[in-house]
Amino acid sequence: MRLKEDIKPVTYMKTRPAELLKKVSESRRPTIITQNGEAKAVVLDVESYEDLRNAAVLLQLAGQGEKDLEEGRVLPQEQALERVRSRIKTK
Image (cartoon, rainbow, N blue to C red; front, side, top):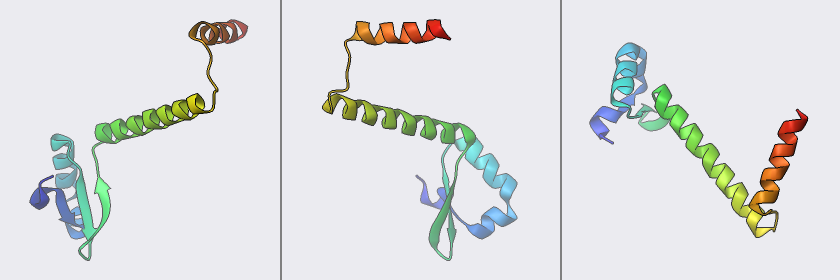
């Protein structure tokens, strides 16, 4: 993060929104928006936002998988594949 470039006051967002969006899109770095000297929001380009959302979903799935493993909710691979195949056939 480059503090001078990546932290902007809310007035910057109000007076130069197109410039802010162009900078965020080109650099793919988030910009922190401050109000009264306090961080209030983060502006991200769409691709970075989607990457973050996808990473969060993968972490949730990994966590659920670990919990299932700890609680004994597991099947041998062949049995799991057979369940999936039978569900696909019935649809």
